[in-house]
Length: 564
Image 1 (tube, helix red, strand yellow):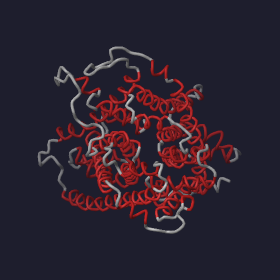
Image 2 (cartoon, one colour; image 1 turned 180 degrees about the horizontal axis):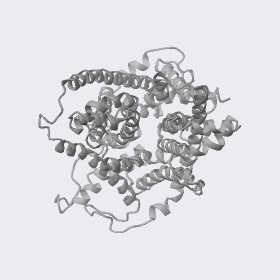
Image 3 (cartoon, helix red, strand yellow; image 1 turned 135 degrees about the vertical axis):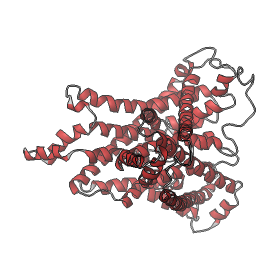
């Protein structure tokens, strides 16, 4: 059974993606008998190409996706180059990690509450600093250039890339490479960029591409922060997929294929630009400049490198705090910095409305995370016993659900689920979440699992224990903490899923994310704030449990109390 587990895991993870792509491709060329499409045709593409605002949507998707990814990478690289090994670096490392557990749409709501014309930031500085007695007349969020969406993606993706860089630094021994470069006379930032970054980037290439693909096709965040005329391509496709006119499904399927081609084009363009950057970077490194002789003023550069990180982190925490404040606010007129009174009216009056989506979200996330953890645990154990590790090519398979745009295959997956009788039922919904939870759980668990010292197992085998007894009595307890943390990561990923719940759930399941996005059109800030707070609390509760449970189980064992 253990030998077949990797193949089973791949089928469960990649099967829906590939089947969904095929299921989207067929109606894109007019073939969907259930809706009257009996023959192949190019009519869906003709309808798509003449759709109003299509090219504006493509242009907006490309600009926001590229700009947010480039800015997130630049902010993270600049901060790491300037501050690696310092106390502020370690402080930010601890501070930014919890942000990963916050769903994208929660960050989007927090940003909107903070920077809107009547947002908290202007309230804090009005009227004593701005002179404003009324909200100013500017459009944010949903500005025409998509800058609010770029900022929202930057706030959420920069912490993810930061943690990817941290993991990569451990694999390439960044500290020693930096020290060696410094001993040769290079200034700190120059030493990091010349000696460390070229080793790190190959390790984070796939996460960067995953961020690019996600930014090009994100839906929930674009619904809250993105412009509406035209919207991004992914949002436009969701509108067509949700339209009462079933004939638009063919046009939407063609658009979903176009979205996939757009992501492939963007990844190809990124790789071409990457080759150009490598060529220029090699010349810069070979030039031997150490930074000091040109009077670059690294003190100022370090300050400039830290400023975006500090501002972004502050914006995220203020935005999230504004969700809590609005959920407890009574009357709150502009420009008052705080509500004139506080109340639990939303929490008590809308208790049933908040409770049901919370339970659905928690059960769904718990199931997906538990199944993913079991599958990943079995795959890694088989990897150890079989002596075969994942190659770089296999890693691309692992990242496939993250690289393929969700809107590009979820319609086809829904068609498959209808055919299998899994549409709108718990098993189908759970499977759709598992597709996205599995890669994150595996990536979170693989390094601690592979780092486990095999001498413990060999000692037990020498004393007559069977391999399974070694696993359950020695390895599993020692790896319980990273296993629970990986499960908490999967739990948080499931909580954030919007499109899979919408398509596979067939509108029959309401989660915190789907309800919060639905409320965004209404503008009830107090209720949105309450949903946002619950979206934060659920993943945080998962991480708290992941840390507290091993500590409680092994409270009487000194060696097990430390992190392995």
